[in-house]
Image 1 (tube, rainbow, N blue to C red):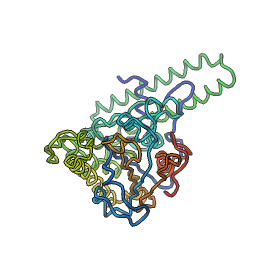
Image 2: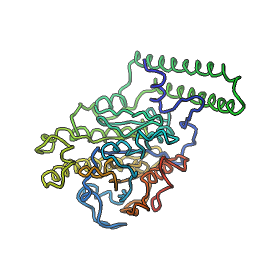
Image 3: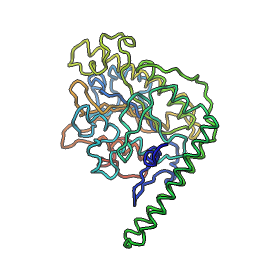
Image 4: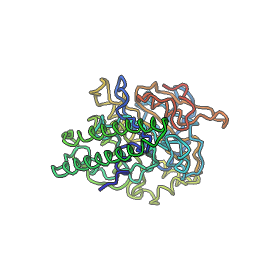
Length: 413
């Protein structure tokens, strides 16, 4: 049986005496329902083929963006945004947070990632507060500093989304909910025992804690309500487990689109790993890492671009799909209310640089069609978390700061 601590972390909340922050279900829904998808890879994108040469509108699409031509007015490219971190691969895990795990204790929300900030706000409004697709992705973090695991098997993802559990499995889930509710009762009774020894200020803090526990109990009940609700039916057949980017990445995107369409979740992330590069892309070496560390050798650059172009082609088909699906909650198309972020925690794999990260944002109701260029000078650097704060507010969160942000991103909205 899961420990109480791991269960609470998995529920997307943080329990700590005497304070507990519960964001789920405390906010009124925004006027429109928003979704968020973050897609990334571990090695960045080849800069010469990703960033346009012109700023503003009417820019020429570089080669990596060519599959997105039909959506050029539905996405924005950003230059000179990053987290101001160093460390190469050791900083890659901070892509969605801007904070390394080793530095998390210095921040109020630890190194929570933007997807988990949103997932906590969505809470139990959907069956899954967030979904994470891909092999060994390390980009999503709770405010406790716990890495949110990802699932790399499309068949298992399909089962979780669309295959109803057996009666025995549902009974086990109900039992788990009841056991964890009992743990909360015990925590509350134990805390009451020493409340009489506290001063006025500490008693006030403890009262806030009790209020938060009651909110958590309410969230447990809401999660339990999903146990016996039938899962949505979809036309997609149960996929077979593939190996690597070429087979799995298109399935990840298709499953995310269906999850958003059925309102099974409103927050999802995906991760492109390597796979069988020899067979899938006709390359000479099996290692994605080797091609990303190309040193500008033509053979390796050519191979890297094949890998990255496939990622862009998958993204383009995903945007096609979201644009083709009616949004039953808001009207319009699903892409109109789905914020799609593409990027990586590593800007340039060959130089191990984390500066000027490759960032693209599509859909979501933003004004797009631009290459947004921030100042390049270090003293005028704009944190990538300013963009994340802008996205979070657009999603519906009533916050004025996200981790290392200094404000919202001027010129984007």
